[in-house]
Length: 479
Image: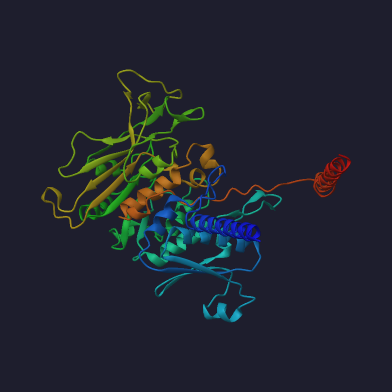
């Protein structure tokens, strides 16, 4: 009897210990999960920008997702929101199916599927349709491929909207053949405009020749590739704006004399009348498309950490001049290799390094200028920030959208441009790498392939398992 009691007690203690160990492991794993993203481009990992914003939340944010229960959208968006919640104690979410709980959906004023972000008295909707990107395979047949899930971009944009304060305005100049921020062509800027709006900026165009000044609501001015000479009155308006502490970015292509080169010279930047050829770091077979090295700065450090490259198809040099104004700091952003040179004979069909005529590299292709408020006894009331880039193609639609940007060596072009604007606008907290579109690769199989897969997995494999089990059972019975 005592022996039975002993073994019974021993079994009970063992069971209790096993249950305790399992509970302890579950507690640890639940609060400190181990995760590994095995996707090729880390699509299942939140971007640096999203993580940075979530960790910086200083107010409680609730996300209410209005989605159909059991749908693919609920699974994909729900998994994403769960990741958001894991990253911040100030973020929470819940899912409501409007068809099952219409009164609750109506209480929130929900009129469509999507996610509503609530922070204090501020609300922002991220419609479900904005979380998927549709594109055609053949424009003539209007055949569509499965949509790309870009939910993180839409959700993070809405999160920024409800947690940021003032919505700053980025003004793009027009009237000199600049890039169109609303155009969908390869050379237009609609792609980066959408990215800026995702960071809660308002992007608009201004014509200084008509307005006679830079509008007061411009947090930064961008001159995207002017193709014509800029009138002196317009340059004077820009100079007055920058002297007062305004921020501006000049994207000046080679082979064009705009007059902005003289204005930049006053800030210590020399814009070369040349086109840079780099035989050491270039894309494909084109030395006219340099892939410059990133120089460490607040603007480029996120790209450097992510090992992203940028490419500039056809660029001129923008370097620090010999005469730098007092109190001004110049910071190179992009630099070519020592095997580069600045071609000055822009009419020659076959560019070669002409000793004694062409200048040898390395060269700076983008440079930032910083002048603190009141530096060198000046009267400016705010800090002046300027960026000069010897190319405007790098931020065009074809170089910042879809697979073309990667094939052209410019995987980081869009992030570089947006980070430049963030720095100009004084929004350093937004400087990082933006969300990545999901890489959805559907499995396409034919009818015969489907039949073979069905036969193998539904009939052949189960039958083999049954036969193996029967053979093992028969062998044991005959021993």
